[in-house]
Image 1 (tube, rainbow, N blue to C red):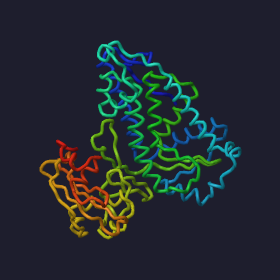
Image 2 (image 1 turned 90 degrees about the vertical axis):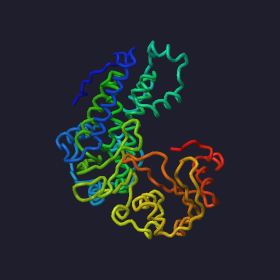
Image 3 (image 1 turned 30 degrees about the vertical axis):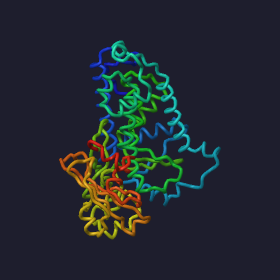
Image 4 (image 1 turned 135 degrees about the vertical axis):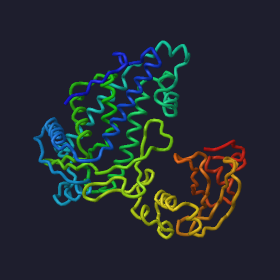
Length: 421
């Protein structure tokens, strides 16, 4: 296994091109590689078992152990059942004994490698281009650079003279972590949250780590040690070849990839972020029928998709699940069916032509409060402007005051807004 050579317009010293447009093209190439890793992180279908087993065996040998026995299962839920049935997770050993176990040694091997690569990246000396100083007599602070990268496209941030490091951090590490680790991995863990004890989960949704370091080396922005390059190759092969897996003393439990993964772009994505979403079936499905339902990035019970009712919504304690279920049937329908008491209604000064409505919350929602029903200031991808409800404190009797509170403003100040979004 070896790193794939990548043409690059970055100079070999690992800094800027002196041409802003050439530098922006380099950042576009970085984004293309990020998207490639995103596809790996979301990939569904059968694993390449030969490649996956070879990579895991390499890890065991590097940690000082023989290659393990491989047990393949159709899903993380099936993996949890197997681990429980075989009693692979025993009582937590002492620290000294734990360090002699293959799971701990493999985890340390990988974490130490990441630490070394992070230290090398952190020590990089950025040479700012000559054209930058003509445009910007004052160097931007780290905070200013992060703000620019967060709100502008990677190419525009490059043309503004921001160095590669904050751009790559935001558009590769942060973007992929949001899409894969915080999104897909969190949802997948909900299928088997308690069954593995302290054993580390590894999987294709860790592509954010692998992509980040791989982009630094393939674009000649960092030269890692040989050991770290070889470990990175092993992790790359695993992300590309299989789904979740777990290392035990003599056994590696390997889960097949999902059979389907459904996503949508997050609202107004700047760095290609996506979130799980499927309004008709599980957003992540596995071959044994297990799966997880997700609406607009929120993990929900099956009933939210197939049978949302006022009664179920009223007794649901999770605010996000409750919100998703209400949006599933529509706020207007929910308010009509639930018979909520209208407290106040007024024109929305921050959204001309639209109305604010303030309702008392149902008794089953717990502490007394209010629901502010408003219209989104911006349109959805289908061109519609969505109505949505916000939970606000029960002390409010004015819809405008409640709307101002959601922005940290008094009602009078909110009334002077030109337009909200």
